[in-house]
Image (cartoon, rainbow, N blue to C red):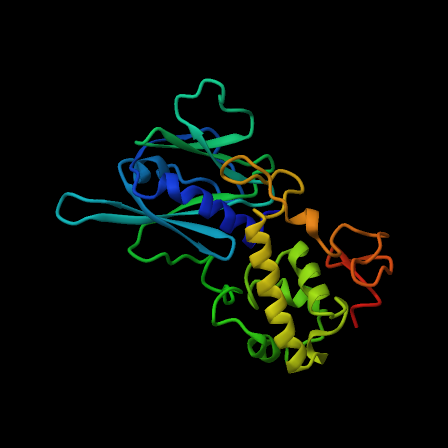
Length: 282
């Protein structure tokens, strides 16, 4: 499913065509997502200008404003890609790109661009926040951003105190840190030389500092590569991501480790596949 690098790549791909454009029309073909699309979404979005798109964890927050009247109207479109969603840029009048079965929403802009939301499994979300600040229950309990100064090894060390959960499941907990999905947890733990089954509360501060840096490097590399395309994810341009092509351990069961040549192992943790090198990771 799209994680932080895929969402950030989507944000960066949308911004040049969306920022400063006015929303001229919204077409909703299917409202039944994980959280149903509000019936009033098109009314709230139409006529507003997209000032910016920010990211919080795996959520995109579209800052939308409309001048005029007694006071400017402002709100936020909160979007989530779910397990199989994507936001793509298409030309509004392109007859070669008619909506398909899983193209649920089109957001047309006054510059001839349309943002199309596609989601085969319908686990995503498009919600409206009618407020001057992006406050929403889905955002209220999220942990720090892993690429921010608020996230470091000391934060992980303190949060792990007394915890017996495995370190991989620990760093995938969005209350601890946001956006570290299954691929990136396995890759960061390999980079930090920590076995994914080790109890989080048994890891030293020095190793947590190394892990925090490994998470940052892994996520930055994934963003530079356009994210990972395993099933349905594509960038805003429609191009796939390429991070998975350079993975050290993810989806490489039985293949030689790129560092020591020992075979990569695979186990199940929390109903997810975990990949690691038993020689390099202790």
